[in-house]
Image (cartoon, rainbow, N blue to C red; front, side, top):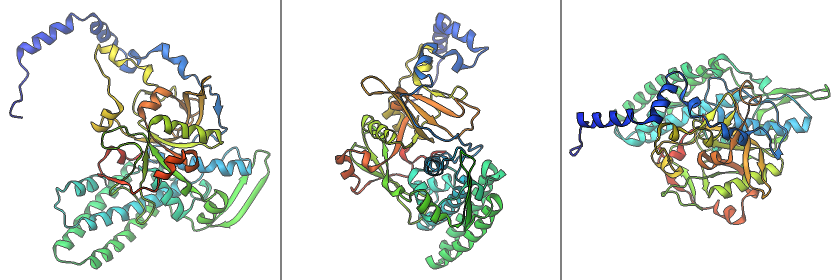
Length: 447
C-alpha cells in the first residue's frame, strides 16, 4: 500500500457538509432511527408482481423443516423424490428421512476430508488448497451431485424409519466438536507422514479414526437401519404396509432409481466460464469414488426453458440460488424490485451477476424446489412458485414466490432431466470438464 492515502480532516468537513445539505438522506436518516432498513426501502408498488397465483402449478406435499441445520440440499432432493411415491400411493402426508441421508453424508464427508489430508500430506500448512480444505472442514451443506452419490450408494428410507433427533435438527455444536476431532486427526496424519510413515500406515490409521466418528454419528443421529417396513395410509384412509425393504430396494423399486438421468445446469456469466462448456470443482465432494461434481454452463434463457419443460411434464425442479438477497422470509418473497436501497441512500448500488460472482458478493447458498411458474401471453415467465424447507409458518404455508428478475440475478443452478435440454447441449455433457479451484464461487455449498 505504498501509494495509499489516509482520510484527511478536509475530506470529513466536505462529506459532512454534503450529507447535511442532502434532504433525501436527512429524511431517510429520520426514518431509519425507528425502522428497519428493509422496511424503509420497501417498494409497495412491486407487491402486485409477486401475488401467489400461477398459470402452471404442480400439486405437491406440505413443506418440510430443516430447522437449525444446513441440509437444504438434502431436503430439496428428497422433496423431489417423495412426490413420486406420494402420487403412486395417493398420499397427502409423507417425508423421506433427511436424517438418514445426512448421517451418510457426514460419514462420507469425514472420509473425504481425511483422504484429502492424506493426498495433500506433502503440502506446507499454508498451501492454499490444504488451507481451504482444513478451513471448510465437514459442513452440513452440499451439492446435487453429492446428493445423487449418497442415494445411489445408500438408498433412502421413509422418515418413520429414521426420524430426526435433537442433533440432526440443531447441528452447530455437533459440527464444532466434529471440527475439533478432524483437526486432531489431520495433525496426527501429517505428523505420521513427517516421521516417515508410509501410505499404508496412514490409511490404516484413517480407518481406525473412521470407526470413532461412526460411533459419534450414531450417538448424534441414531444408527441407520439396514431394513425397514414401509407403512402408509392414503387419502382414502386405506392402510398398507410393505415389509423388510432395504434402503437400496426402496430407492430402486419405489422411487425410480433414475437420478443418473438428471444434470446440473448453471448460469455463471463470468469471463473464466464460457457458455457451452462443462465444469467440475477440485476437492469438492462427499463420497470417494462417487458421482463427480459436474455443471453445464448455459445462458439463463436456456436454463429457464429447461426448467419450464420439466414443470410442464409434471415434475418439480431442484435449484440453487442466493437466498440472502432481496428476500422477505415472513411474506415468502424474493424480488429485487421490491427494495430500493439505491434510492434510499442516493447511491449507485448496481452489481452485475458476473461481478457479484467474481468479487464474492453473491453465490449459491440455498437449495429448494420449483413447483410452479406464471407464464404471460407470450409464454415468458413472470414469477415462480418455490417449495422451501423453512417450515410452514412462513410465506404461503411454507411456499415462496420469486420474481423472474430475481431468478435472472440470483439463481445459479437448476437440475433437469437430460431430455429437456436441446440436443446440442446434450452432446456437450460428454465433454471433459474444465477443472475449477476448490474456492471457486461455483464450489459453494447450499445449506
